[in-house]
Image (cartoon, rainbow, N blue to C red; front, side, top):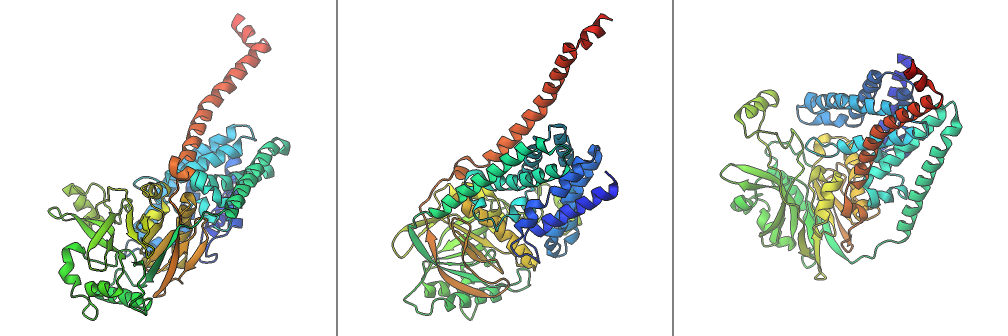
Length: 532
């Protein structure tokens, strides 16, 4: 294949995947673009005999998709070169070995290739979504938001099974287009169609049999739409959030069960600055406000975990109406190089970061998977997990929080710095799969959006418009705690794919050589050679 043709296919594939992911044109993404997005890339890699070119093509694909879908990372303060440019280059180099693996899959028979291609791609998306450098954006599953029946399989295999099906569909379509003998691909096409039909049927059955609601939680969600980096905005943001809360409680004898603000709304550690919050804001002191609303408040706040070493956790705290801090949860999955700088316990590392990015201090990762609890008006105890910011994008982390006995996911987020609708919707789309995976209600209370209540099937029940200061009071449905297949076994599907790939890559070449030796012996070639 010529370089110009492979370049065209690469650009087409990157554009289609970027349009499939939520963007400024398609707010919730486009499944049509998504399911066909890897057809051009498959053809480009299939038609090149060079592992080097396959690696460069795949690296360029990762680079372009990251730039086009996560362009809003450039709005992270003054670090655009680092947050967007640096991360894009990082994905380019990671894509090279993935391209080698994808190219190797074409050594297998035509009916096997689409499955291996999809398995390798899914394994890549899993690897980029776990660990210290995890970033579960730009994935195929983000293109599937419209396919409500199909995505119900998330409670079985997480979002990895959905991404696998999308990639497999693209790969089969590409193989049918390119194969000289299309009959050899028909079994793979029929099997793929059967998988999609079975998955959709499973989803329709689940949708037709919703779980029985146990109770509800009368909840006020506050979206204050404030600039998180505005100097001296602590009092202003507090006062704005308090006014929006009071708006939802017109009668003092009708308090809600819970008020939820967004991440980082309390800038100073509450327990250590109680006297400050008794005075600020002057127009409506915070502690007095808590007594007036007569309801618990869940809000983002720093928590001092080691006063001697001046170590802080990015946390959410649950405060009672009398001002008592009832409980808290510390964020475990921190944003690498933004919230957490690795190895900063060493002076030379701190000096390096200070010289490169201008800061070296960071949050301390939380260490405890836990859920918080409160009672509603019916006297029923409700346990909820509170993943912070982009933690709700991580399947396994959220499942571990859920498995502490939670029957509600309550996420507090501050994404307003992105200043783009696509960033807010992307976060929502990837988070919405947690509700399906765990069959529980998901509530997202954000600074600027997307504040929303999602049911256990991933459907929106209530929401607020983006980048608007507003509040809503909603009855959040609560369902009994349940452990789905995914909640019990976690990321079993990518682990299975990894073992399958390793096994095939080792066994198949050996089998081919043994068959070759057998055939040579059958025709006497080996014996004649030896006798000579």
